[in-house]
Length: 552
Image (tube, rainbow, N blue to C red; front, side, top):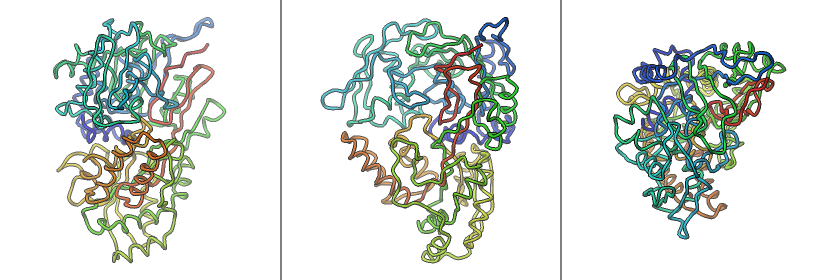
């Protein structure tokens, strides 16, 4: 699955809300894949359960099973080269390791399969990493440097169209120097190398060496992480057990995990309130007060954004003043209060305010309807009417009518066309965004599950062909300049100079507003700390139990 396909399922995962499983899978083209995952994995571990009592406390003993309910369904395979669904990506943090991993909560890099963080050569063009002693895959096979080199090489092979390749344009080659040592050769220096290679999880070469093997591996993954997958069902969820071959730094502290999956917020609330599970993700904003005082509830500022994307090749949206006008016309404070119950932040930059690389953009779209009217007048635009395409992510559905009403106040009329993200982003001629008649999109996205740094996040939407060229039809000097600035920043070893280059990009994308953020949401997680110790909520999609254990 390439980045274009991946954005259907992971970057807008809540597009599943309100859509039946069969209808969604039909739209996304994953019905057969989901059936394969269900059949293959259920066969090896028994059917996935939505009401597990495994490890229930008896006579005061501590339960041995962590139970949770996730907000999305498994809509992709589990091969980490291309895993793209919110559930699949979260599962892989437990099943696989990279040489380096990013802590899912703090987002800080730490040596995982490697003994230590990679060491750079004197010229900055070579990096070396050494495997930890005794590392094995969950099937008992020793991990070798050849497995590591292969995991990168297969992802970088253009023939595989791997999602992760988009994040590694600086790597020229990866070589196994001996059984435990891997050497990376770069095309140009890349200061963020130690943390960026976390996007590649190590897989056994013998199980992924050709297309047929890789297809089987996608449904029956074998990794080096602290957990192994026993079964997976596209409807009801996943079962895990401890990987007893694991000897790394984050050993599992329970024996089993059960992940129930549902897009229904009411079901998740019932699960945590009724004690069926110890944690749920994506608490609906209207239910937060209902849970407070009964279980632990925490809201974390996330990158997860509502953005507007314009067809920049179509008049009048080829004029950035028109794009800017539609942003100035939005009362974001009112939107956050009304539609998000306060669980959001109006954008002052493409990056959210909690991101360590955050810098306020030179253009901030505060609520200014008079300026919006003036910009339209300068552009010679009157009686503007267009169709606003939106994904059916719940918070987008809640916000879209407010946007339409606010645009009416400046004399702009928009009609709504809401569809699942798979239908919105499908390739031509079926996808709504790919049609010649497309003008404006309101959707959500959050690539921070892959990493939080400015380079990665900016490249997702503003480099390559998928978003700027393919969807926004945005060409000319600005996107070219952005790509050049990102490459300069990637090679820059001076942190202050790198930050200055990113600031130029942040200013450009704000001013151009071809694809730009309206607001960032907050992610609300609920858990019962009386029954679950060591768990912390993440600021991305997914639940993570690398340090969690059950309590009596």
